[in-house]
Length: 517
Image (cartoon, rainbow, N blue to C red; front, top):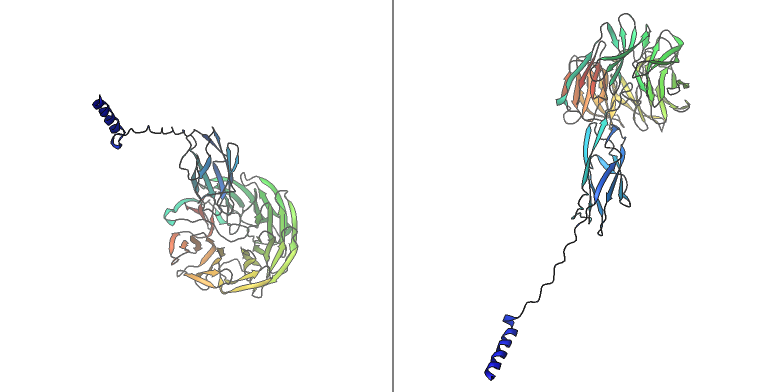
């Protein structure tokens, strides 16, 4: 019996030893809580918008709403293209709705942009865990359009600048418009889908035409009759304005037309005698004209009400015709030996800045002051006979100080352009095109005029190329590097770039166009 008890005790001891100890039951792993589904709906206020080439910015809102609940945090995560859009303020949450505001970047190159906007809801800021049903996207399209070419040298500043980068490798011939019996065509205006021109005919008639910007086919025409002279058209608000003169009088007519249909709206009157007119200038619904029976008068009209606003006499009195007024936010600028500064609202003469370099070469000016930057206006020093072969110095006026800032050491021949602090002008007397520092007048670089050629018309500047015409052809040269020739066309004349990205070359007998994109 004792042996049996000892055996039992030995067995029990062995069972309690380290080698044979029992393993405790494992702690159960908790079942993970499934991430709930949060179904998201995106509601943008716009999926396609249009902005202008200038500093205009389009804006829109985006509401991201969700259904469902979660005991964990709900963190929104939004992705978009920062090269096109910026978020305009913080996200605002109201219940199950996250509200965003966006605006487009200013100064974008004119083209079509496509940007995918992605939204999702996460359990943490790092977005390691994404709620099912919350990942949604939509595509936002932005068209950045070129601005209208409204008047001489494009706009009321007359700076000849187009904010766009063009690739000469893709330039192609587009269309030509050459009506029979044409004896002259004035510089054009253009808006999307339209190019407007004033044409003289061999029978003495003067006709305003609208041609299709894409095809060059005629859309409408309006006869001015057998007038003595007429300007090129100018776009002013939703009107088209053409200055005309039948005979010397105090009742010459600015014809106001509907640019879409060519229908007549009214005549606005002004004084002139045997004048040749530059295009008038418009800002908003305000129209400005430089004329007068003996010159030296600036007229302003309201094209919304189709009434006169004011007229005012200049201080110089040396220019009768061929000039268009320059406009900025506050003032209208008129050159007639002095640079006169008029208040836009009242027509009051704010100040007159004398030009000691002024030279009289006849009653015609054939150009305009240029508002090259705030507080800086540049103008040719003197009048010119009806030819751009006469070269004159350029003078820069400090508007705030009422003084001359600089006078160019060389004389120039065509209508200059200015952009980003650089003024571009061609000189027939010196045989070169110069790039001048806008603030000092110092020559930064020059391009030699080919032998036997002369500059004509105007200079047009973009972000990458400089366009100009000679008597032989139209050139595009690079603004950077060696300023080498990137493209030429076998036509020459007045240049413009339309909102449809077409280079328009206007000669005395035809309009030739080239697609730039």
